[in-house]
Image 1 (cartoon, rainbow, N blue to C red):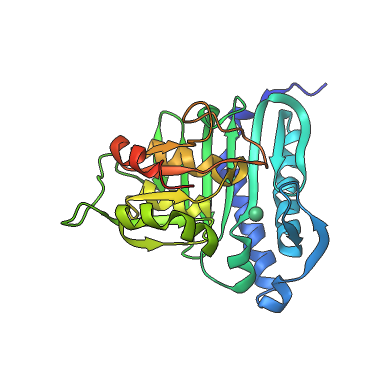
Image 2 (cartoon, protein in one colour):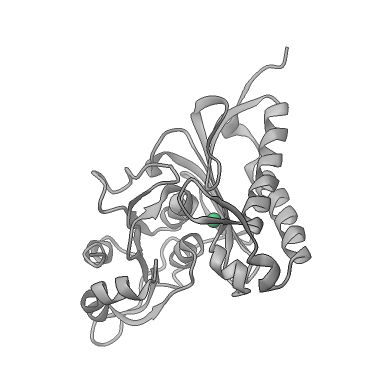
Length: 281
Ligand SMILES: [Mg+2]
């Protein structure tokens, strides 16, 4: 009989790196937009039309999870296309977005990311490990709860502060869910908050920019999904930043699911977080 082991103790960094290697090879085989735009004809559990690259990326990650189960680890997985998959233990949850920023991946725009989080509960506050690999710059971000956050193996400096212009506005603010209609609805608050906006097109990588204080904050203008933000939000917090999901009861009570719940807001200070929380309409 195989003994069962807590999946919190697995070597998640090695697992995620193997998945990244698989995704890189898969994407290299389909380099053009024409190939990457092929759809499977189905929709993911979050409602988006599924691209073949999303489907194949998810399969590569689930191959790693299948191997983990063979080794005796028990958990459940929550993923963009498949929803919740039972691997024998609902206490430990693995939250996956195989490609966050699929539109960028499809069009060959640099930032798109694999996002993997491991949690011992059902909300953002329960995430113990977060991993984001941004395939554009080839950057690897990860964090362990209570231990800090790293970029390409170097610890991120939790003391880094935000930068503001002379008029008090943040120098660089990341925005996500950048549908022009939603920008229009939030434009006055954005105008008062930031000197310049940047829209990468991936919530996971955008959060990581706040973790490294490249962005002074980030705001999604519409509700984010647990799978998009789970890993990045831990990386921000372990790198000295602050995160909230303002439409939820508590700052970090957003559910670790594939359904949209609340905008995600991140900043380098609590004061700025409170200001940015008022932007999404
Ligand atoms: Mg995705």
